[in-house]
Length: 425
Ligand code: GLY
Picture 1 (tube, protein in one colour):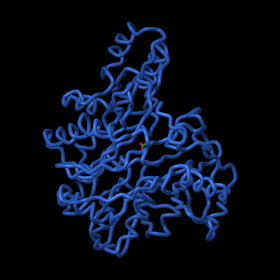
Picture 2 (cartoon, rainbow, N blue to C red):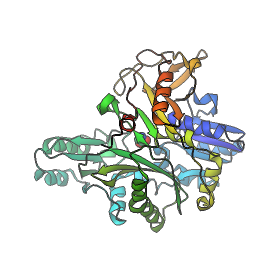
Picture 3 (cartoon, rainbow, N blue to C red):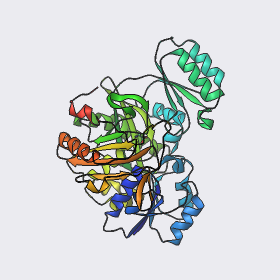
Picture 4 (cartoon, rainbow, N blue to C red):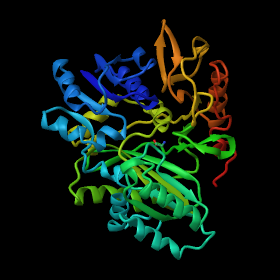
C-alpha cells in the first residue's frame, strides 16, 4: 500500500514514521513534510488546503489512503472533497470538524449531550458581550475564547472584568484574530491539571489511547508564554484507572453517542482536552485530530501496525479490533528556537543528531540545506524516549537532548515533573 500524510510538523513525522514501519506499506508520501520527514517519506510540495492537487496526486500515484494531521484542512472539508472523488481518507468531515473549528458549536454540543464543561455564554454581537461583562466582578477570573480557529492564540485568560472587556474588543471590534474572533464565548475559569484523552473513532465506537499530558508554557514550572506545546508524556499517572473509567462514562461515550445522534461523519482521531475541576473531569476543548506533541509521545507506545487501525476506522470495524499498547512510559521533549514563541531566527545548523541513542527524534521545524539539517521553525525537534518507568524515560530523553546543539536552542528541563513528583495538581 501507499499512504499520503497531510501536514508538516512533529506530529506528521511521528505518523509517517509509524506508517513506514508497517510491513503493509510500500511507500509514504507527506505533503508538505519537512527535513526529518524526508528520511521516512517522500515530501510532496502541495499545500494542505490545495485539495484538488492533493487528490490528483493521490490518483496519479495510486495511493491507497490519506491521513490528515492538522485541523485547517479538516475544517475546510478535505475529507468531504476526497470522498466525493472516491478516495479513502482518515479524518472527520467538515461538519464533524466543527467540534474543533467552532467553540460555540462544541459548547452547544456538550450542553445538549450532558457533557461536563465550564459554564459559558456565546456572543455574535460585541455590544451584547460587553453588556454581559458589565455585571462581571472586577477581580473574578474569566476566559474569553474566539469561536474560530486561531492557531492556538484564541484563548485569553483574563484576571477580571477589565481584561475581559479588552479581550472582547480586540477580538470582535479590532479583529486581531481576523474572522476567528467574529463570535466569542465568555467562559467560567477553572483551575486544575489538564489531561489529553485521544481516541480513535469510526463514528460508531472508539478505542482510547494512553492518556497523556502536554506542557503548554515555554518555561519550567509552567511559567511564561503559551506555546504550541513544549513536551508531553504518556501514560500520565494522574489518569488512574478510576479516573479513566469516569472519563469514559461521563465524557467519551456521551461524545460518541452525540456524534451518532447528530449523524456526524467522524472517522479519525478525536482529542478530548480534559481539565480537573476539583475531582471531576470537565471538557476544556475538542480537537478533531491527533495532538502535537502528544502524538510524538503516544505513537511510539503503539504495539501494532497503525495501518490496521486506519483500515478499521475507514471500514467502521473498530469494534472488532484489539489495539495493543506497550506497557512502557514515553516522554517527548521539544527543542525550540531561541526567542520562540515570539520572534526567532531560522537557518541554524542542527548538530549532534548522530550521537542519539535510545531516543527517536521527530522533526517539527527543520529543512535540509547542503545535506545538513537546519532550523526552519519555532518548534524544531521532539526527542522521545521510552522505558518501563517514567524516571528512566526522563533520564534517557534528557541525556539524548543534551547531545543536540543549535544556536539559541531552548527546551524545558522539567517535562513530566508532575509524574516524577507524584503530583496531581
Ligand atoms: N497539544 C495541543 C494540541 O495539539 O492542540
